Image 1 (tube, rainbow, N blue to C red):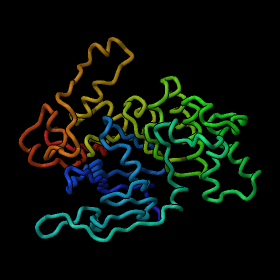
Image 2 (cartoon, rainbow, N blue to C red; image 1 turned 60 degrees about the vertical axis):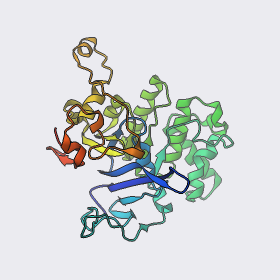
Image 3 (spheres, one colour; image 1 turned 135 degrees about the horizontal axis):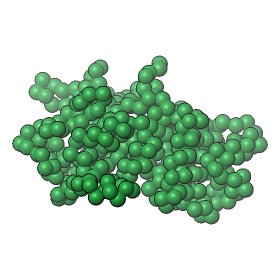
Image 4 (cartoon, rainbow, N blue to C red; image 1 turned 90 degrees about the vertical axis):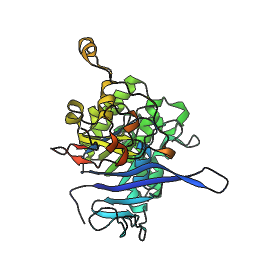
Amino acid sequence: MSSEYLVEVEHLKQYFPIRTGFASTTPLKAVDDVSFAIKPGETLGLVGESGCGKTTVGRSLLQLYQPTGGRIKYNGEVIFDAGDLDENGEPKVDAKGNPVKGKVTTVNMLPYRKQMQMVFQDPYSSLNPRMTVEDIIGEPLDVHKLYTTKAERREKVLHLMELVGLNAEHATRYAHEFSGGQRQRIGIARALAVDPRFIVCDEPVSALDVSIQAQVVNMFEDLQHKLGVAYLFIAHDLLVVNHISDRIAVMYLGKMMEMAEAGELMNNPIHPYTQSLLSAVPMPDPKIARERKRIVLEGDVPSPLKAPSGCPFRTRCRFATEQCAAQRPPLTDRGNGHMVACWNK
């Protein structure tokens, strides 16, 4: 079965039970009703403040965490279904309007691991310190049995190292002998070892120096042009995301606030939260920087354990009304695929 989209996420939910008493737990809604789709060879940038649920979206999508709700499709095939959506992909409800959950459907993810990979945020903790670079990059080849002889394995590892800008003599070294940028390249080579079509990039440049960030981002772009791989690129730096992404999605407190083409979102942000984020982006031109008006948000981000009713952003929004408190705004199309969840914009 094939599809226009490589990856489709419908009403994804990821709740973690948090103990709040001797015998009671409260669900922490890390991801709450998030939907998006990514085409083959496309990059979707996912941005938001720390703790908004970006990384959890990526890990849940690859089922490193089993999602609490929603449906995930890869190339038209359902790889997870919590049984809480109808045939149209909308949440099931009973006669009283309460959510209904049916049978959970999961698949063996091992064959899909060859198609869907992840580059982790921290290049220091995501590599095994007891393994050489050759073994780190070659481990996916071992798991999926993608070679017949040791010579073929070594040849594939050296090719992957060359692809990400590492020298052949690095193969026998250990991770602690490399800089942060080189370690991240090792992690990228490991993700590419199984020739995936989709990679979740979880803040892959946030732990790196600015000069190294540019090299790694350019390398991601080059690899995409060579291999046709699609990315979910998670970051909190809007300039980096704008540079690499075809479309950008903005999250706040586990929910999707806005999603549009990269240029459209940067030039015409509609949601008050997106406007505030963009006003904080540093501009290299002093004249433009002086003319820009900074939108400073009041208050702190609410706890996900005690999220506000209605719109999650209303406690910090200058346009909030009674409707914002009473009802959560749906993500609606404002034209040309520009999706916004706001009552007043």
